Amino acid sequence: MPADRPPKPLQPKAPRPGRAAFKGMAPKGYRIRMMEPGEAADLLRLRHLGRGASLGALTGTTDLAAFVPYLVSHEIFVVDTKVSGAAVAFAAAAARLDIYLLREIRVAPALRHDTVVGAALLNAVTQRARWFHHRALVVAADIDSNAASAFDGIHGFVKVSRQDSPADLIDTLGGEAIGDEAPISEEIRVKWL
Image (cartoon, rainbow, N blue to C red; front, side, top):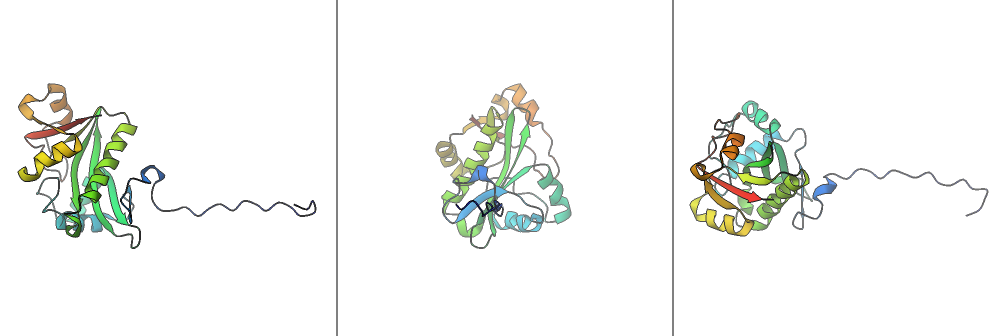
């Protein structure tokens, strides 16, 4: 470089959407990120479209004003397409003392039989729980009985009834619904981390 020319200032790169923490976890053509402002209406629509083959209670509001407090009380993971940016799946989870409680996963109807998207989303939730040193990921929602045994076996969960659960786990989960949530189900699935 000639001595008479000043060095070029470094140009900051434009920020790319998404979080670096979840890079590489999504299937090709998708990305996993946390919910962004202004997405509540899209996620509510996805929640009701994705009821047929989803993890989570089948009750819930169709009112956006009642859905927003639910979103705020959880960490919301979103899978969207890299091309359009449209959300195709989401998961809601929250820290409850030393466990990470997964309340629901919703997947768009077009992807119901493509287990890769749902599995990637569950993997992102599991990794998040590990990063914050939770001792377990707990699914306290009803799962369709046909899908339950496959879910348990593939993803490493153990089914435990409320009666057989340790008292401190039940105390941590509580018995009351929070906001739009359905009450904790009778079957609890635990994945020790």
